[in-house]
Image (cartoon, rainbow, N blue to C red; front, side, top):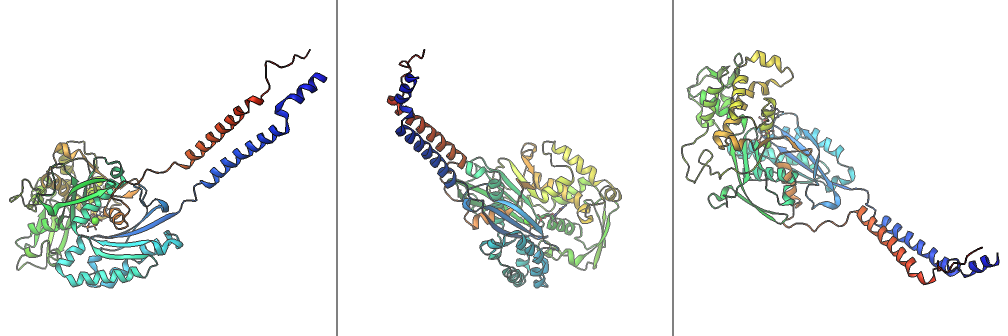
Length: 497
Ligand SMILES: Nc1nc2c(ncn2[C@@H]2O[C@H](COP(=O)(O)OP(=O)(O)OP(=O)(O)O)[C@@H](O)[C@H]2O)c(=O)[nH]1
Ligand SMILES: [Ca+2]
């Protein structure tokens, strides 16, 4: 028993000094880890918001975007959280009653007030961009388009957001921002990856934008847009064809068929059995066709469907001019276009139409696309209506024309062949955000895409805490090891008999 007592007395682990040092060491490590965890705990996520109104020719849509407040500069972080389709036609249709254009936006704006947290209202930028419908109105009657813009401006200023202006975008901006949106959402810009081209088919204009190695902008400077984004330079080819959106293109094919001011036409682009009376003055009330209005035409004409894809394609082709080109190569109407390159995302009406016609699979031969259109166009109108009772009649009636127009625009207009056609993807959304010019427009105006690559992000919180914990444990072990001279010698342990 006395030997045991003697050993206990000699054991340095049980001296008060060692016990105090060990306790202090443990407390210090616990404190270090606690401070690391608490100090670097991610704060509850705060979001910022931005609102863009897309005042298109056929309708207006409102988009709300959201991004983490502390990450304005990081790509891929801005997301569309809400969209609202304004009831009624596009703002350019209110030329005769501009106040109604402003009034029409109210419901969607009230929705935005509900969706964006109140304390963020005042700092949330609000933009309105108008496209081809307003471009046409501006050509036709610039004071009327000014009035419409003024009316929407005063309507928007009544809301508590940070109003940043309502303006008409140029075709070039519309094409370029559509391209930015697609590539931003695909995370192609920060990674410096090859980019995706953008094809946008609206009601009154259509845009094609892509990066081509063969294009440095010199051959046609008006089609060139240069960007420096995240440290990479891009030389973008873009062109917007005014009047080649699908509604104005339809007008042009009808103008082509009513040149002599007949009282009726047999239209190959509409299904057999479809018939409707149309007004000459309404049809020709657009700068896209107004100079072709036949003299002495009656007030109305009957449009009756003939349902013939091949003939429809001939009529559609007649609205493109392929005769002159002063450049090395052109798409149509004497417009320069470099060699097509890379994958393409085709959105807006490209998607609506090809999705309805079950033609979004671009790996099928172009001949098969033609066959499908041929079969759709030759289906009687009654049967089409029966098969699709829930589809809006206006859309349904126009699918034969729209499908034929899209195929002709892509293959004859832009010169997509079997191989390049298979590089097109018909898309509506990318990662939950609509493909279109609005997101690119907002990112640009809020300077959210820096010219140079941002510094690499700091260590994530979990990584930080793990490293501090490992370091603390290592320090503790080191501390214990440093006390080695005080350790009891195992070999000298007294034998207890
Ligand atoms: N089939 C179908 N067509 C649609 C739908 N929504 C819009 N469209 C039509 O598709 C065409 C293009 O629509 P948008 O892309 O909204 O065109 P927009 O922005 O008003 O016109 P732009 O100012 O030329 O860009 C128009 O003819 C619309 O009437 C839809 O859900 N289904
Ligand atoms: Ca549009």
